[in-house]
Image (cartoon, rainbow, N blue to C red; front, side, top):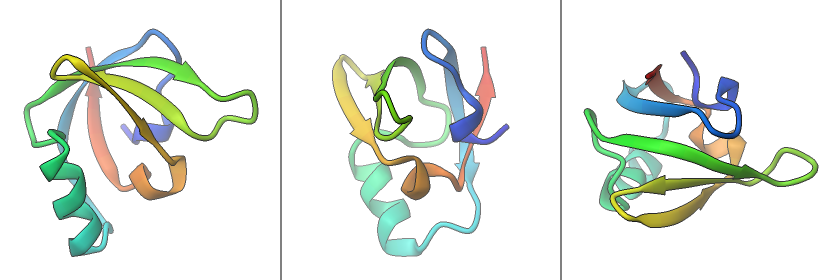
Length: 75
């Protein structure tokens, strides 16, 4: 499942990354989005972008376009 298919309130686990530039993949991983990490979609902006998630106890906002290559498993 793709990250951008998640809805507000969904919980998911990071499975990996596909078609994400290495620099941005490293940035996502440095923010705590490593494979196996669980998170919850907390909020979507009115126009759908950005998306706020709660991961490892903090709130993180991601642009849909940049996180589109993140593969997730809905829990």
